[in-house]
Image (tube, rainbow, N blue to C red; front, side, top):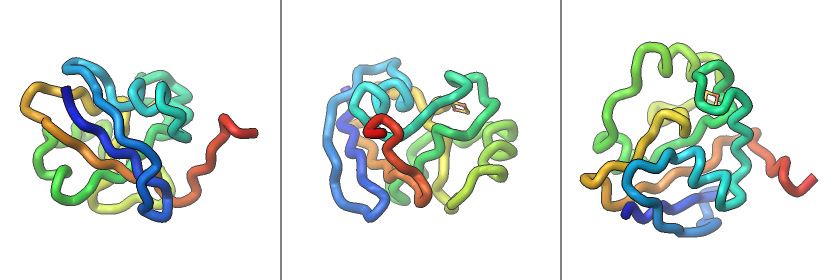
Amino acid sequence: MTKVRFLKIDGSLDREVEAPEGALLLDVAQANAQPLEGACEGAMACSTCHVIVAPEDFERLPRASEEEDDLLDLASHVTRTSRLACQIVFGAELDSLTVRMPGGCYNWQDR
Ligand code: FES
Protein backbone atom coordinates (compact mmCIF):
# COMPACT_ATOMS: atom_id res chain seq x y z
CA MET A 1 0.00 0.00 0.00
CA THR A 2 1.07 3.55 -0.70
CA LYS A 3 -0.07 6.43 1.49
CA VAL A 4 -1.25 9.13 -0.92
CA ARG A 5 -1.74 12.73 0.15
CA PHE A 6 -3.85 14.89 -2.13
CA LEU A 7 -3.25 18.61 -1.72
CA LYS A 8 -5.53 21.36 -2.97
CA ILE A 9 -4.30 24.08 -5.34
CA ASP A 10 -3.30 26.22 -2.35
CA GLY A 11 -1.19 23.39 -0.90
CA SER A 12 -3.51 22.55 1.98
CA LEU A 13 -4.33 18.89 2.62
CA ASP A 14 -7.53 17.70 1.00
CA ARG A 15 -7.30 14.05 2.01
CA GLU A 16 -4.96 11.16 2.70
CA VAL A 17 -5.78 7.70 1.39
CA GLU A 18 -4.17 4.29 0.87
CA ALA A 19 -3.55 3.00 -2.65
CA PRO A 20 -2.96 -0.69 -3.41
CA GLU A 21 0.07 -1.87 -5.35
CA GLY A 22 -0.62 -1.82 -9.07
CA ALA A 23 -3.25 0.93 -8.87
CA LEU A 24 -3.05 4.01 -11.09
CA LEU A 25 -2.80 7.39 -9.45
CA LEU A 26 -5.54 8.71 -11.75
CA ASP A 27 -7.98 5.99 -10.64
CA VAL A 28 -7.21 6.56 -6.96
CA ALA A 29 -7.61 10.33 -7.41
CA GLN A 30 -10.95 10.02 -9.16
CA ALA A 31 -12.23 7.55 -6.55
CA ASN A 32 -11.40 10.17 -3.95
CA ALA A 33 -13.12 13.16 -5.55
CA GLN A 34 -10.00 14.87 -6.89
CA PRO A 35 -10.66 17.30 -9.77
CA LEU A 36 -8.85 15.35 -12.49
CA GLU A 37 -10.98 14.76 -15.55
CA GLY A 38 -8.78 12.14 -17.22
CA ALA A 39 -10.63 12.74 -20.49
CA CYS A 40 -8.69 10.21 -22.57
CA GLU A 41 -8.78 7.56 -19.82
CA GLY A 42 -5.03 7.07 -19.81
CA ALA A 43 -4.45 6.98 -23.57
CA MET A 44 -1.96 9.89 -23.23
CA ALA A 45 -3.97 12.18 -25.45
CA CYS A 46 -5.23 14.95 -23.17
CA SER A 47 -3.16 16.00 -20.10
CA THR A 48 -6.34 16.60 -18.04
CA CYS A 49 -4.81 14.33 -15.40
CA HIS A 50 -1.92 16.72 -14.72
CA VAL A 51 -0.71 16.78 -11.10
CA ILE A 52 2.25 18.35 -9.35
CA VAL A 53 4.29 15.83 -7.41
CA ALA A 54 6.02 16.90 -4.18
CA PRO A 55 9.71 17.51 -5.01
CA GLU A 56 10.90 14.94 -2.45
CA ASP A 57 8.71 12.29 -4.11
CA PHE A 58 9.33 13.27 -7.72
CA GLU A 59 12.85 11.85 -7.77
CA ARG A 60 11.62 8.51 -6.45
CA LEU A 61 9.25 7.94 -9.38
CA PRO A 62 10.31 6.28 -12.61
CA ARG A 63 11.13 8.97 -15.18
CA ALA A 64 8.39 10.22 -17.47
CA SER A 65 8.48 8.92 -21.03
CA GLU A 66 9.21 11.30 -23.88
CA GLU A 67 5.54 11.07 -24.89
CA GLU A 68 4.43 12.09 -21.38
CA ASP A 69 6.89 15.01 -21.36
CA ASP A 70 5.58 16.17 -24.74
CA LEU A 71 2.00 16.17 -23.42
CA LEU A 72 3.00 18.01 -20.27
CA ASP A 73 4.46 20.74 -22.48
CA LEU A 74 0.88 21.46 -23.57
CA ALA A 75 -0.64 21.52 -20.06
CA SER A 76 -1.18 24.74 -18.13
CA HIS A 77 0.53 25.59 -14.83
CA VAL A 78 3.28 23.01 -15.44
CA THR A 79 6.15 22.87 -12.96
CA ARG A 80 9.46 21.00 -12.84
CA THR A 81 7.73 18.18 -10.91
CA SER A 82 4.59 17.88 -13.02
CA ARG A 83 3.42 14.42 -14.08
CA LEU A 84 0.38 12.81 -15.66
CA ALA A 85 -1.59 10.87 -13.06
CA CYS A 86 -2.52 8.21 -15.62
CA GLN A 87 1.15 7.28 -15.96
CA ILE A 88 1.92 6.72 -12.28
CA VAL A 89 1.46 3.15 -11.08
CA PHE A 90 1.91 2.45 -7.39
CA GLY A 91 4.70 -0.04 -6.80
CA ALA A 92 5.71 -1.84 -3.62
CA GLU A 93 8.76 0.43 -3.29
CA LEU A 94 6.65 3.60 -3.06
CA ASP A 95 5.50 3.93 0.55
CA SER A 96 4.07 7.42 0.19
CA LEU A 97 3.33 10.04 -2.44
CA THR A 98 2.13 13.62 -2.16
CA VAL A 99 0.55 15.37 -5.13
CA ARG A 100 -1.00 18.80 -5.52
CA MET A 101 -3.69 19.83 -7.95
CA PRO A 102 -2.30 22.38 -10.45
CA GLY A 103 -3.46 25.97 -10.68
CA GLY A 104 -6.44 26.37 -12.97
CA CYS A 105 -7.82 23.06 -11.82
CA TYR A 106 -11.40 23.19 -10.60
CA ASN A 107 -13.69 20.61 -9.14
CA TRP A 108 -15.94 19.76 -12.06
CA GLN A 109 -17.67 17.14 -9.92
CA ASP A 110 -19.23 19.89 -7.79
CA ARG A 111 -20.82 21.67 -10.74
FE1 FES B 1 -5.43 11.76 -20.66
FE2 FES B 1 -3.80 11.11 -18.62
S1 FES B 1 -5.94 10.82 -18.79
S2 FES B 1 -3.27 11.95 -20.54
